[in-house]
Image (cartoon, rainbow, N blue to C red; front, side, top):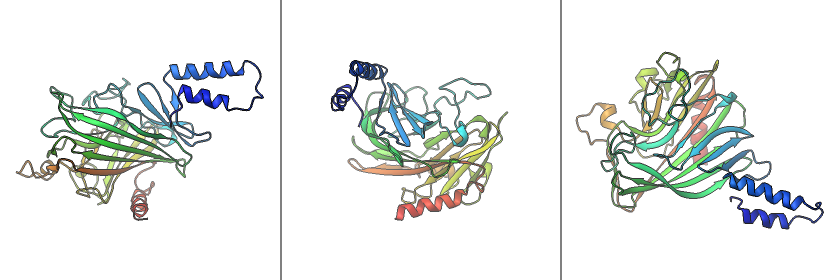
Length: 343
């Protein structure tokens, strides 16, 4: 629970009365200044995963080190930026949030880590060209820090360019305090709800659970030296459009080999998912793009309709690691993920 000014005052007056005169005024001034700066924290003392609410975003730290920030206010759609991996390496592209050298300025809608789709009831929630839809933050249900994990539960509305609410979602972002310093791990769960009539996710490659990687990690490009591998053993460019239980994209960042693996939950609809994974650094799990990925004549083959009043849930685990897929034992980590689900 976030600490409000009123709660802080009550907490202060419950303290033992052994403090020196004037300490109360200093305490209240400090609280007031922090709240005026838009800072509140749900972290208990000594919590290993700390989530702090700022004016327009949440800051997520593990043992005092930044993992990411969740931007939810005044944005086209919520996103997580940056994404800091083991060894304090930045695993996602900075642009368009920040301009740094040697980064391509293509696809301005590729903001670090996000969930969206290019055809929902005919509306584009992926790109940001003319007439695109927005995913609008509708509130938090939980912001919780802790020694072993932290949790962010939020709600959103999918709003078309004409103001029509197409549907809603509920998201859970759960961050784990890692056992080893050379890994980071978190889960992303989204429940898509057809709250305003049928909600059809159209068959297009433009989606859905996505990351835009650091330039040096990409497969090709002037500074790209990365590699891609999936659970079937398919590598690099051949991984595009293939179905697999997991996919791993790794490459050098600041002289270290690091990677991101995304695990498709075995109970997800259409598991194992197709992968919209590009040589320029886009890395996405997309269960809705069948005709693009399999070169089918039927452009609606992959349509996925959620009936009015119903919902569908998709879950993914992100495994941030040092080394390549073999050194990081990505396949073994996926099996551990599957076992944890069945327990």
